[in-house]
Amino acid sequence: MHIGILCAMPQEIGKLLDNLKILNERNFGDLKIISGKLSDENKEENILVSVAWSGWGKVSAARAATRLLSNPYAGKRLDLILFTGVAGAAESSLKQWDVVIPNQLVQHDMDASPFYKKYVIPSLNQDKISAKEELVEWTRNILIDGLKKINLDKFGFIKKGLIATGDKFIADKNSIDDLSAQLPGLMAIEMEGAALAQVASQENIPWLIIRVVSDQADSSAPQSFTDFLKDYEQYSWFLIKILLQNINKAPI
Image (cartoon, rainbow, N blue to C red; front, side):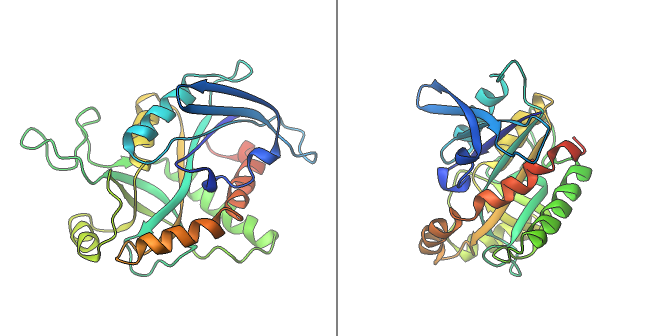
């Protein structure tokens, strides 16, 4: 299998590159795609991985996703594209280190009214992009079981739900309250996920997003985010590792 892994910042993949062998690097302007084979001597399956960090925002995420999808490695196109990284909490019960796997995403800054209702993406004619529910549930269970097996209690609850994407770093409780009122069930906010989901959906490639809560998206968010990243870099690889070690069983 060939898995594409995308994140906004290198801290969000941690030690992934250290666990790939026969590395190949391709450059597209300032975007770098690094590919290799997963180094796991206990696995007979060949897991190919192509990874890139896009930078912040929807345009950067869409550009990087498109490059990943259009550049096979070892003659193999992607079987799945994953975006992983951090997010701000919108649901008050979420705390730092909780994990959210979106089963739906919305672009909270999309508004083509009066031609379309607010949030509707014209090219898809829908306001929310839905993930494959079976894949989301499988991922949640695999992460819960995998973290227990390695006795890693750093991460908190692992939940699924609605995530909103937009080109704004939200650090204001009033903004979160407004979004939550307009988008019932909103759990977290970030800046790339729905763009990746739109590109993958339109290209008919399976996709998955995993987000870890870094802050509460309030006035303390900038400092919380910065401090969290330093710690998160040491642990982000574990989520990716658990997923890759079991990916051949995934309902893609």
